[in-house]
Image 1 (cartoon, rainbow, N blue to C red):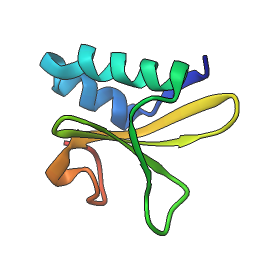
Image 2: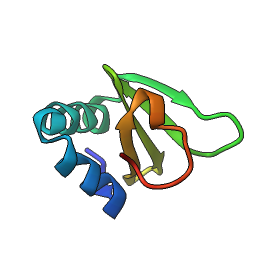
Image 3: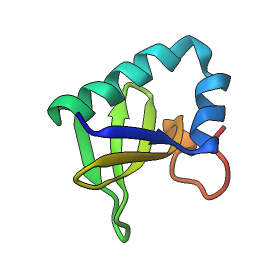
Image 4: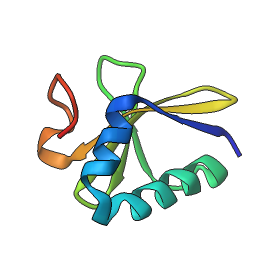
Length: 84
C-alpha cells in the first residue's frame, strides 16, 4: 500500500465534511491499496482526480506515496484557493 499524505487544506476539508470523512478516507485508502476507483488525469496538470460521489479528491501520485492536496464538493473542487 502506498503512503497517503494529506495537505492542511485536505485535512480542513475532512474536518468540515465530518459526515462524509470516513467514506472519503476509505475510498482513498482503497485506491492506495488496489488502484481501483474513478481516477482521471487533470488537463494541463500532473495531478489526478478521484471521484467519490459528489466529492472530488485532487492528488499527486508517485511510486511510493499519494499526496492529497484538495478535497472538495464537485462544484468547487477545481476552483483556485482553499477547499470549501
